[in-house]
Length: 248
Image (cartoon, rainbow, N blue to C red; front, top):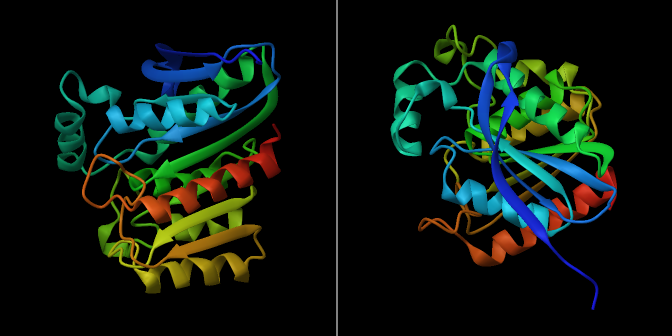
C-alpha cells in the first residue's frame, strides 16, 4: 500500500500592505511536486466548513491555503467578524486581492510545489474568484462557486467595492469555471446568463455548469441548502478542471 499523509495547520502569511494575517493550510506529505489551490472563504467567514474544504482539496493532492480575509476585524467568531464586515460596507477589494496574493506566494514557495496555482471561491468568495481572474494574472485557473453580486448595479458600489466584477471581464486572463444553482436568487438565472454573455463577448476561456434542484451554497454540508447529488457532481467537475489546468 502506498503511503498517504496530510498535514494541516494555522500559519501566518504576508497579506495586503505586507501585514501578517492568519491562514489555514493543508498539504500532502511527500516530495511531490504538487499543484496548489487558494480557497476563498464565503461571507459566513473563515469557519469550520472552510477548513473542511481545505482538507478535501489537500486530500486530492493539492497544497491548499485559505487566508482569513476578515482578519482585520479583530477577535470574535467567524459570524461576528462577518457581521462587522457587512456593517463596514463589505470586504475591501484591494485588501482581498493583496491577502490572496500573500497566500499565493506562500504556496509558490513550498518546496514540493509544481509551480501551478489555482483559486476557488464560494458565495462572496465566488465574486472574489471572478475578480481574481482579472486581477491575479499569475493564477493558472479560477473557480467561481455561485458568486453573488458579480453584476452589482452602480447604486450598490461603494468605497470598499468601487467596481463591479462584471466590468472587469475584459481583463480576465485565466480559465474560469463557474458552478451555479438554478434556484439561487443571487446570482439568479438571468444574472448567470448575463455573466456568460459577457465572457463570450470578450472571448474568454470558461466553462459554466448549472444545477436544477439546487440554490445557493449547495456544497455546504453545514446547512439545509446542501444538495449531495449536485455537490458530488460539482466537486467532480472542480477536480477535473484543476487536473486539466494545474496538473497532478
